[in-house]
Amino acid sequence: MAKRYDKQFKLDAVQHYQDHKDLGLVGDASNLGINLQSLYRWKKELKDSCDIECCGSGNYSSDEDKEITRLKRQLGDTREAIDVLKKAIGTQGN
Image (tube, rainbow, N blue to C red):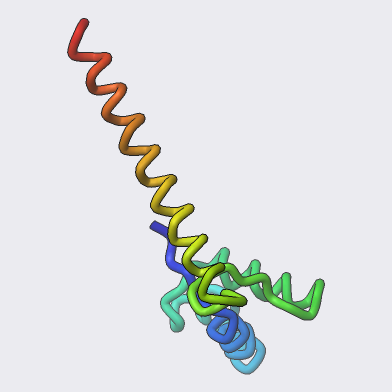
């Protein structure tokens, strides 16, 4: 499962890169323990739109939005489990 970072972490990570450009993206990502592509994407988002898109924990406009997201994730997991069980049942009969 992918890690989710809040907006402040993303902003701090980009700021860390700006402060330590001598390390490069690879060095900064390694120091922060994050994926290189994530840091690159956050840096690009901040440059292009002066903001970073966030859908991670702590970025919900209300408790209802947080609950809706949790339920959607749970529904997706349940659907995946049902698909796996359907395939397992289908292969037993052959």
